Image 1 (spheres, one colour):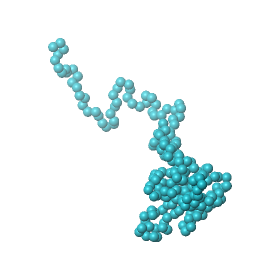
Image 2 (cartoon, rainbow, N blue to C red):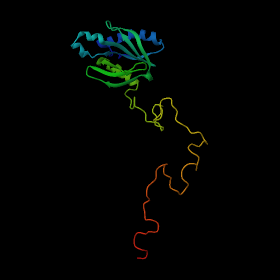
Image 3 (cartoon, rainbow, N blue to C red):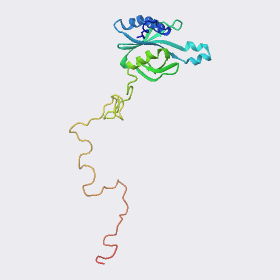
Image 4 (tube, rainbow, N blue to C red):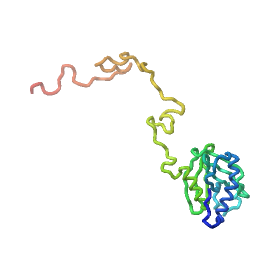
Length: 227
């Protein structure tokens, strides 16, 4: 979960802070998921208003939320950290790995960001992570398949025009397409309506097609035959 120190050396300042946060988060995660799940990697992240708002007002700090995001064998865990001490206090969400969605990942110069969505949340939350946790967060996203080609792509439409198993075009959800009954005839019986074969259709009642165009009977237009 953490990077080992160099041979013969001690962990650096930032690495000691990472290890301490991971040790404090381990019992909180184990209490929610059980001791059988192993934490593979974790990172300290935050959400809320940008740090640039602190330049305008120090009260903007109270609009920020701090978390410890961990990846286990089967779940993605989001632990809420204390605002004053930064220690993980409780598990806010534990979502199966195949149900989370991560989009719009950006490394950034100091803070990277991505959008994180899971079932039960109306819209994705914007997560920011400091660059000192970039190796851990990219390892987590890589194991989730975020960097794989086609991650989050919408599949092509099915032959009936539906996507994700939805209804074909023109049908409401839950409505079944119409299926005719075998052997049953739809429409008027053959020969009951319409003119007899070889005759023009009759005009509607009260209407006529008007004068017939063409030469009167017995009168011929054009030169006589043989001239």
